[in-house]
Length: 510
Image 1: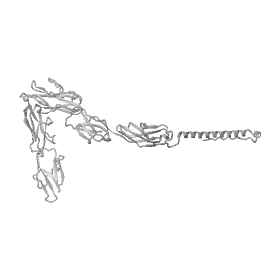
Image 2: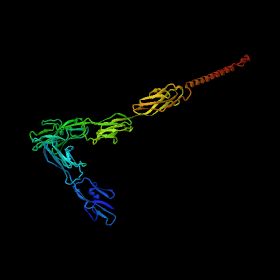
Image 3: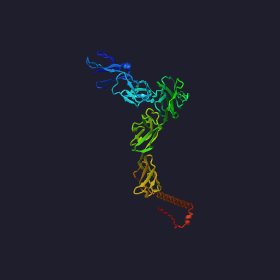
Image 4: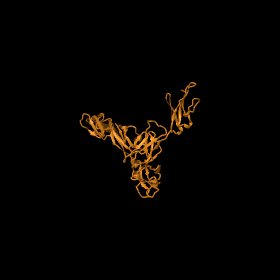
């Protein structure tokens, strides 16, 4: 195989145009080799201009090795159209058909919308929607689409349901009678007007109080809400109001009001649409211990739509682990890693997260150990034993034990022996405890490592005293001898030769 490409005209000789390299279709046409000898062309955002027969052409390394696949693939392009009766009366049944100008695949699934809201009522059979025993509420703009291509809806077709008593009917139908919105989000409310066909619509606006008099406050023209409120005519007789960055001050009943060109042609849609505004809150246990399971619930003060999808964050990072069920997150067999600030949000409104709630994963004391101060103990010292541990929350209760004793010898993180003697020697250990459990340390040996300090001081004092005393005696003797020499020789003859000099020797016994 030398080359493979797609072309629109069926050419057997020469070089036909290669659609994959067509500069006019760059970025909109993609040709791929999916596997050996399988090739595809993908066209995005097709229009009527793409309606052609497409041929796959390839060449090989031989002189006549060229082939164009005929008859090729016929591409038709269609849009969808809703066909139905324009007007029916109450209690009638009506069928709406979603039509296309070419045959869509057999497995195509059709979906239906009224006033932009997807329908869950009615009988859907292939490309048809059947409404049985219709009421005024069924009036509105209907659209159809293909599942998976919901953004490609048909143009709206208005179905008018007339009053069953034959009189000309007046009324307002709302897309929803109740809306629960997140604070800071954007809310869109829609209404469909019913009025006699011979009347001409003059004004339409939204108001908060349901007022039946001529002059009612027009929210669309409220200067205080300029830039935050937008009123739009979407389709025939369908009007909407959009409020951005809603707050609790926007909690009201909203009514759609219109007037026609006749003297009594005024109508306010009652009861209107109730708008509630809420913020999200995470509720959970504040503290759990390792290996426990814990549920976190994302709560709101009003009922968010059934199809709301909740997402979760821990320390600003979106969570992909855990069991997600509606507005709950379940964490199983938690570890210290699961500690952190948790927040929830609604998918599509990730910027409107709940305030953070801290989940603390606790564990009992670990790595309990004892340190001794001072490290070298002599008798009479003050000795301090300190108990250290790793726990969450920190251990508050400490007990001290001496081996071979049945009861504890102390409490508190520090254990002090004020005057250590041989009776205190032994092996000591501590036990640390918090609300999740306890653990004891390894025992350490505590004993005298040197002489009795008081005795040592006594001996030192006696020795110093004796040395000083002997030094004084020697000085006295030397001074006495010096005086005798100064007295002269005549004094020596007068003294008896037999005079003895007494030397006093003091013994110092230690």
